[in-house]
Image 1: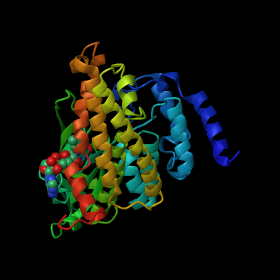
Image 2 (image 1 turned 180 degrees about the horizontal axis):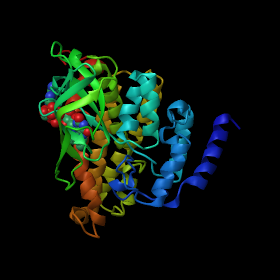
Image 3 (image 1 turned 30 degrees about the vertical axis):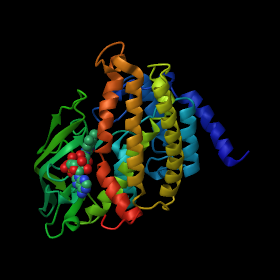
Image 4 (image 1 turned 60 degrees about the vertical axis):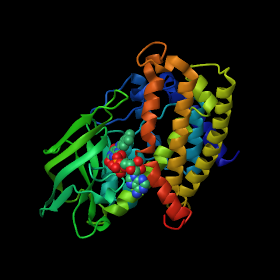
Length: 389
Ligand SMILES: Cc1cc2nc3c(=O)[nH]c(=O)nc-3n(C[C@H](O)[C@H](O)[C@H](O)COP(=O)(O)OP(=O)(O)OC[C@H]3O[C@@H](n4cnc5c(N)ncnc54)[C@H](O)[C@@H]3O)c2cc1C
């Protein structure tokens, strides 16, 4: 038996013993994902226990170093853990922008003090983070951002506005791009961290077509930020921002895998909508399945290369584009499969409207984290090296 086989059998036994039964059931809605943080209300004792036991082992961030609250697993071990969790249908114990975005950026750019302070809080789900990047005049042209941070000696004074800040009204802290110099566009940006309860921070939810308000306008009015809460050097925040965006795109690309649901046929039938008899729909599902399996294989290859530092720097853009297009197709199929039942917003037949809400939400996939057009531009320019791109 190899070491990895032994790790697999120990992991399997541990998961069997520690993953609460209700955490092995398919998720019905967004609240079934645990986001953690100061304001989080656990949906069940099982959800709380699952977070606690996984965090205790460092398995909420299995491949982070142990000294920062991680599990210290190798890439292969982390993959085995994922496979074993998928085998029993275990939900992720914790989902957060701290894990998928800020953590990797801190591991790469943070000081030792910052890593020791912020990373274990993220791993234990104690602090929920939001992302303050986009502004009313700076989305695709992100480096055009105008939120200003002035150096006031012992602190930064932040003034300005962000928009589309996901969960800003529920988050505890924000990682925020600010302008610290107007002399250079990319070279005048600094990456700050601050508490959302700091005086001068306010949020206003934006109501969406899906009926939810997952994001906000976020306002900063003379917000005082301690000097040491900068990641990387002053005016070098664009490097941190870009690195983080790579991880954000990797995370969003993962939606193409369908949250572990798998292939198109499974998505549609597991949704409980149908036994597809329509031959055209069956053909669409088959075509989707082929693409979904190819994407899953490509994702594994990408993840291995990305972790080993061998992936092309623009490859997250390629993965993000492919994964989000796939996820949109998956949701289209579920809607087609469910027929008129899935059009009902809030009924038993539509299972509380999960399918139409997910379908509408998926439309944002090709906008969030950088639009599809921008990803295609990046692929054209940096990977395909097309002229004029
Ligand atoms: C669900 C969701 C969650 C989000 N969460 C966050 C968050 O937490 N924090 C945050 O900071 N932001 C967040 N965003 C914002 C997101 O990053 C921006 O919406 C995105 O970067 C696009 O910017 P924009 O909305 O200003 O559109 P614009 O940049 O104004 O783009 C409008 C259209 O023009 C196209 N376009 C623009 N420039 C070019 C070009 N050079 N070539 C070709 N086409 C172009 C775009 O592709 C798009 O179709 C979120 C967005 C969504 C949908």
